[in-house]
Each structure stands twice: as C-alpha cells, then as structure tokens.
Length: 161
Image 1 (cartoon, rainbow, N blue to C red):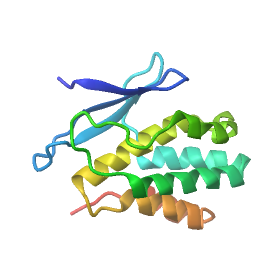
Image 2: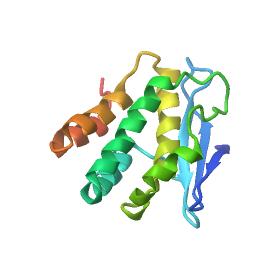
Image 3: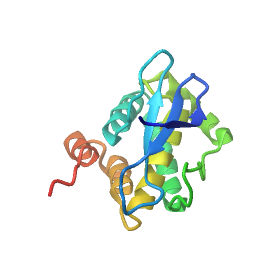
Image 4: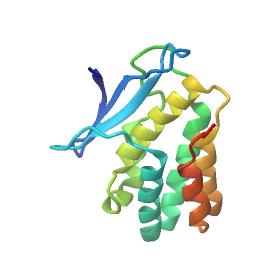
C-alpha cells in the first residue's frame, strides 16, 4: 500500500503529496502527486504544466514568460533531496502574488505550478544529478513557445531504451 505524505496544501484546497519512489539506487527517490478537493490522487507530468502555461500565455504573454523565467531561476538553485520526505527548498508564498492574474486562466494556480514543479525538479536532481530534462522543457517553452510541436515533444519525452 502506498503511503502519501502531504508536502503542501494550496489556497484552492489541493493537496500536493509525495510517496516513496522505487529506484533502488536512490535512497531519497520519491514521486509527486496531487489531489484536488473531492478528487482522486493524480501524478502531474510535464505536459500537464506546459498545457496550462499555454493557456495562461494566450491571456497574458508577458506575465507568463516572467513566470517561466522565475521557474528557470528556481531550477538553478535546487539541490538533491537529502531526506525523505523531501522539503520545498525555494517556494515562498510571497513571491506568487505578482503572478496572481494568471490564476484566472487554465486549471492550475501559480501556487500549484510552482510547488509541483519544484518537487519534480528536486526529484530529477536527486535521481539524476546531471539531468537537465526539466530545465530543457522550460527553456524550450521560454525561447520557442511559438513552436508548440517542439515544446510538447520535449514535455512528453520518455527515455525508451
């Protein structure tokens, strides 16, 4: 049975959770999940965030690109988890107020996006210290958002061996 640990509760009432991962070579591997009020537990993927960011972009391009720049900056400051469950390292509720207008668009709040992406990025840095998948996805969005195909392709990449 999976044990879920609450890491954050958003103002909108969404639980952001983690569970123990199954990578044997990583002592601190974890998975990120969320549960909206009355809903079931789900696992966010890069593509879910990217689609929501495209919706926000269509309503306020400048502010959405500022949010992407903020996310890219956060990625550079994160370090691998040194404990389980992992803790948020950068997220600060005071920083999200400048992006509040974006909460009107798409399904996810800025708070949700920042917390889940931070946890996903910590997971990547924990399991793949040299990995850059998250950074590449957000940089591709920032630098080439007009090329939806390439951005979606980067966000849905899976390492098929």
